[in-house]
Image 1: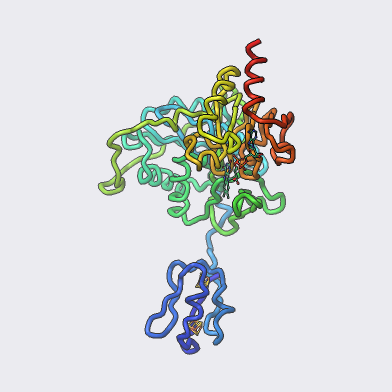
Image 2 (image 1 turned 120 degrees about the horizontal axis):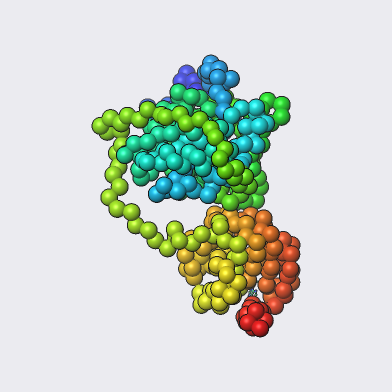
Length: 393
Ligand code: FAD
Ligand code: SF4
Ligand code: SF4
């Protein structure tokens, strides 16, 4: 829907300006003017006391959506290594492709990365669209957007999935704008509507307090970013074959507006919570940043790593790279030990799929015990040393 001002009726009262939640209306020469920020929400229509704002149906897109076919997965690679989320996207992509009845493809960009196509076939891709160019060696928004958008225009996939990694979160929206379609970010569930075969994309909304299911009915491709660690990895079938389709890559002066001067690796890239099998996680119950030293002792004994709740991160006790939860990392270890963590919904969203959850908390009514397989009611500063002592024995 769009809205229009009927100039003859507008009295210039500016009530609509104050009521537009998107600050999309301005006054010019005592007349309301709708700006480009308008989302078509329609709030202003009822607010105008003079019925000077009308709803108009947007021009219907005449494009034939059935010309779009296939599920594509962005095969994110860094320094010649496929990111773990790609196997998860291919697992999910295969399920969706089977339900729609179409093929599953991967899009691989880089320089000297052709050999990675084998890995993508082994994880279930039927085709790999390969773009190789020196300018694609390091990820840059302009270069990857241009190449993949050109491929989308040429081959018209129906669904495009990207990992909600730093790169995927940057690339996804740019591609969606170029392709003139929508994007649902940070999906935790994807389904095909059995009736119309449209993609139903579910993600947490309103601070994680409810799940929203979003569809993209009028535009293609249907695009989603998916959080790493949420979907099941595709099985690896060594020797599985597929077709490589080379994409033509041409850049003109001005196509790429940035240069990579230096790559600085910091601690954040070294914490691999997603792959950890044992996680000892701490929250505000630690009471002080030094509490993580005790957790580290336990984690080392178990061959695991430490993690944290957002409150502990916000308190400045530990880096954000360690945060588990809706706005941190989603983890699925074999054992997750939550120490002094209350179990807020946003934290639980990131660890509830762990195989075994052990909670240590002084409050027997803490919500974390609702998701825990084993609960220990007690002071973590007594319980953890006792556990370490037992492990030493
Ligand atoms: P608290 O809720 O303060 O809990 C501390 C717990 O420690 C209590 O249960 C207490 O009984 C226990 N305790 C105290 N002393 C001891 C002791 N000596 N021994 C044992 N137990 C003890 N949170 C996340 O974790 N990850 C996220 O990604 C995340 N994203 C968010 C996104 C949004 C939009 C919002 C609004 C919030 C988000 N949060 C997230 C914050 C979340 O709502 C909680 O505030 C946070 O998880 C609480 O952290 P906590 O459990 O460490 O602290
Ligand atoms: Fe014009 Fe109606 Fe807006 Fe008042 S509320 S400025 S009359 S459009
Ligand atoms: Fe603002 Fe919504 Fe009216 Fe657009 S339709 S001008 S966004 S109130």
